Image (cartoon, rainbow, N blue to C red; front, side):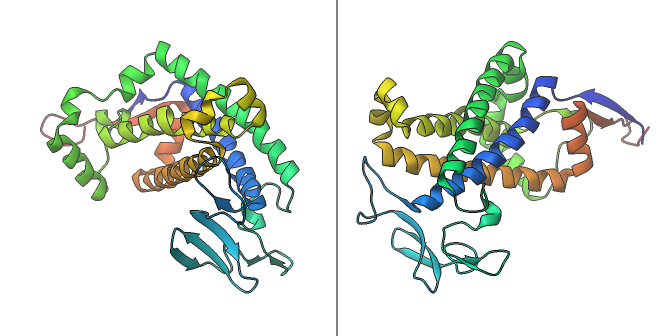
Length: 272
């Protein structure tokens, strides 16, 4: 089967992709350490140990657990109560291997989180502006009218379920589910994470007090921040799974070189 190459990713898109992998990993791990300082989430302006939390990751000194509303799940050994590398019991929401730093330090976690948060926010802003001017948004992410039909959407869902991915000349294009998920993450989830993060900062509240009104208070902003981060982690997990299933070498190579392989076929369907 003869192959040629076609352009898929702009240089800036590739740079932003790999920097984001670093930024998001650091933000997630340092954020989990910050969460360890108070592993409960509330709605509204205020929240304390005595108030009702809609989510709690904690321990009973003998078992770890996660509680969401009235649902209670034991998570001993993973969340709430676990063992560190020295076989010492850690009574924190998330274990050391999942946090930055590995040992409990709220101050250090905040320094890591805030430093990378600004780089992440500036990178996202630059990506949006450059993607607007170089045509990436309209050319690659714009969902066209024909793609909104129920038949087309259902066909795309079935292709994903059967692990049928774009091939040949279509390999350089995004399908409906890809476009829909990328648009949702880039233009909704990521800005939501940034804005709710700003809302939790007392210094930014003084400059932009209207953010507290938009998100319903600092504790509500913290809850939305956590939910949006969870959606982002889920998106990344699905993204990695799809890369593996569709061919990891081809996918990683295209994100490094910006080009993808195209198999050429003759009119009668035989490989040329």
